[in-house]
Image 1 (tube, helix red, strand yellow):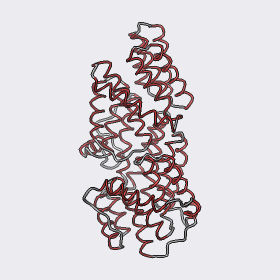
Image 2 (cartoon, helix red, strand yellow):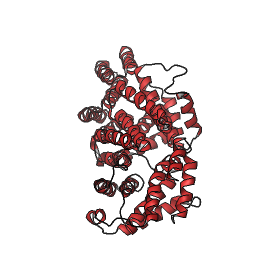
Image 3 (tube, helix red, strand yellow):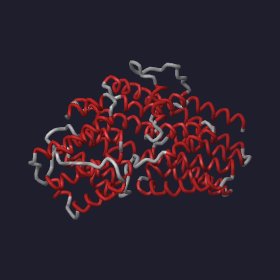
Image 4 (cartoon, helix red, strand yellow):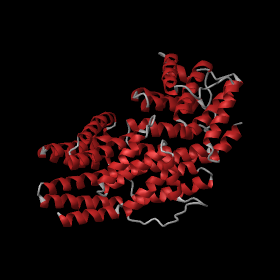
Length: 459
């Protein structure tokens, strides 16, 4: 049955893999609801898991006895596999599986798969239940359980979860790059291909949000995308496609009509396939990246349309870098639309984004403080508070530079240039446009840098 579930997942039949696995789990004494109000059940099961943990210390959990029930060992092994398949097909089922893994561990003892269960539990605490300190605790606990494990088969999954969903809430995004790359290499060596691909997918995405040079991102996505296709893991490549398209757009490269990365793997077809499944995370990411690119190139009407399409999709939880990016980009778009239209709905969305960003900046200022400052600069500009706008634009530029987000530094320079141009201060606007051109060029966004030069000429 383990082989069957993995085979179905590799063939892109995630729903069938989940159905087959859940059927076997029911025979092992672990039944899951597949209907009714699953979200309410998740809340109940989460509360149950927390109650079982009670006041247990980390040391008490790490040193629990090993599971000695063969059925429970088999169930934990299968839940580990199903957690990955359901993560891509049904986040509600994924959450229930993770909570059951934790409950089984607390009731019956420790096995290798427990490390993943506690890591994913920590991710749920952080992303879904907004308990960031609690989530971090169980992320660290899962790393300790890995040290106790007999093999490294669970390491790629644990690292993928901890360094995607937990650590970025508190640590710089860049701190996740090395662990995610290590998780990929470990997974490839030990044969845990699907989790290896999950880790390297996040490695590429993190590098993009860190502001790595765009040509490097393009090379990474091309390299690992081919490996994903070769190993029948195309579902992960789909998550990289929006970023690949954005990178090429910013660089000024034209995609040919039939860009292939593997046998029969047409990028435009894959993107369209994701968009047809409107409720999926992949579709949300596509709309988000398209809204961001449209905003960067000054197509604000398209940006707002893509933003509204993205907001229709309800996501149970998202990695902090993605949730933060939603707030940042959609806040900037909302401020721009408020400037253009004066409509109250855009002002409300804009101010709401600032409140949300304050929470992220409180926990991870290295990732989010410069974003908050740029939103506040746009807010001051909208309110006509020129002194506050000037101060916030410059502070955003300095903060982005300090923490290595060159793409956001370039954007802050550009937005400041736009602000000064509207004030009729052409000399200062020219200075900021020139700085934006320099930073966009350093990032590798040649096409965007050329746009800044044209704005300079027009100012």
